[in-house]
Length: 248
Image (tube, rainbow, N blue to C red; front, side, top):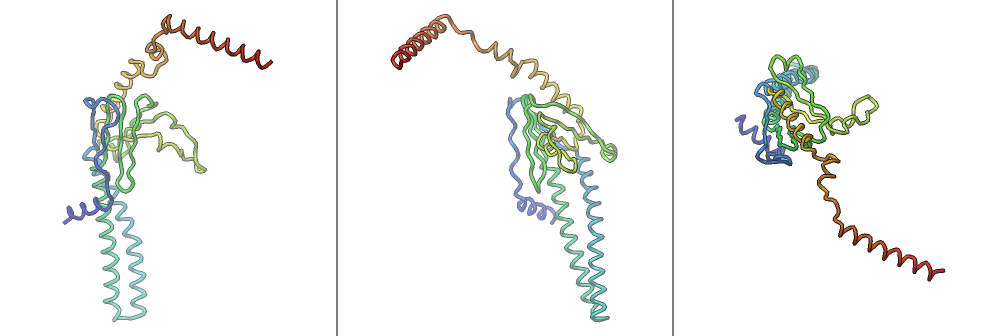
């Protein structure tokens, strides 16, 4: 039953197809996924959220039940039971929907790297996909909170050029999300970081985008080509002189 409900949620959310590898050599493609313990981490957050959201639901049920008893007395007990049952049923359906979203959020999380770039997709309610060229990477860092430490998972953060943008009135960086890619809930954070750094060094060693490489790639003009340019320049100068004399 839950599987059917989950599939219905997936169709409802219109989750896109699996992402294609980012630009680069297809043979170098590496796909990293969130660790199974990351799903446990998401379940803990879901349980806490569900428990806290149950409190206002019960408060509403108590208020409505009290009002029904005052108005109808003992005859209002069936109405009280009905009201409480409807509220708890709605809360249960909402919790099941969020649970399906949590599972989909874990399964539909993609971290893909090639020899030139990486692509990260996350989210199901709001899908966010980001492609980063290694040449634009400025910093790679690994973080781990207390709960993550217990589960043995890490978050790897990749900052790209332009990540130090302006801030809102509350001090939050408005461009951080636009210039930061996250590998959330992975176990092999050091391996992913080393892979990105290795491929980044390979790009730098190859001189990709360096001025020296561009200068080396552009061949020097041949003597015949320079002679032709001089001839064109001489003709243009003569024409300019003739037009100036006619104008005077």
